[in-house]
Amino acid sequence: MFDRSIVRYLVVAFGFTWVVAFGIIILHRYGHIDSNTRDLLHAIPAFGPAIGAFAVIPDRHYWARRLTWSNTTRWNWMIVTSPLLFMVSGLLIYGIVRHRNYDLDQFAVANFSSLARIAIFWLPLFTYGFFEEIGWRGFLLPRLQKRFTAWKSTILLTLIWGVWHFPFFFYRFSFSPFIAIGFFFGLWIGAIILTHLLNQNRGILWFGILFHFLNNLASSVEKEITVIVLSIGFMLLAWMIYRRFGPSNLSSTLRYMEG
Image 1 (cartoon, helix red, strand yellow):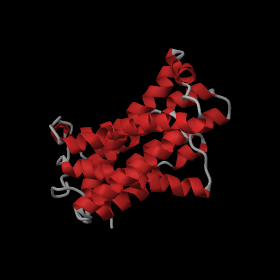
Image 2 (cartoon, one colour; image 1 turned 135 degrees about the vertical axis):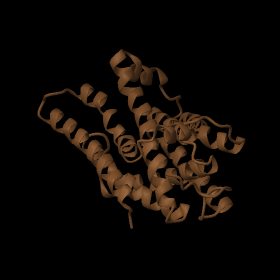
Image 3 (cartoon, helix red, strand yellow; image 1 turned 135 degrees about the horizontal axis):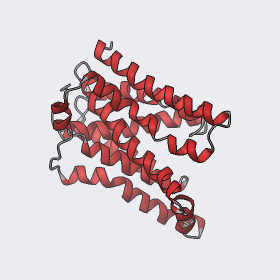
Image 4 (tube, one colour; image 1 turned 90 degrees about the vertical axis):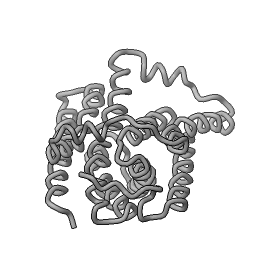
């Protein structure tokens, strides 16, 4: 099912991320690094998908073209910035449900009280938002879309993307069968939106990068009610994309297949 370039990509992407992530786990478990250092180093495994993509396609002109800024529609700007809208809505609903406002001061103390805490908070948001998109949507999705519809390609990418996260369940995420199912479902919903942004913008990566970053940011502020609002909002967006554009391209333009 996969061509050789995809196999090479997956070997490099998974290899780098898993070696670094499990190395971090081992160093922390045996007391060689503390929890703050572990959380700071967590930004590094994000480089795996981009390193894999650059290894298979080393042409700098190709990547310069994919990372060139371009204009887009108001619809796509609405999608890109939707995590912020859902975050604000979630915080407002939090105040109604909890009968008190979300404690932003406590959040600031926890994440911005020192340079180390600032780095621990912001670095993963940037590295995972940027370097994951270079790999998953910069390389893998266009290659899959050469063989399959955008819908089938998104499903396949979601399965691969989810398995790539495996080491993080040992120190970053909680794990249970229910959480794992919810995690894959959330990735799939997000992947539908990201596929639309890639195809609708003819392969330009910046819109998916911004959406990914803002989603990570919104998910980090308040992890209960706001995350529920984000999930519901993204499900509605994904449903609208599927109904409006159909499974073949998930966009009004032909699915992007360069690479």
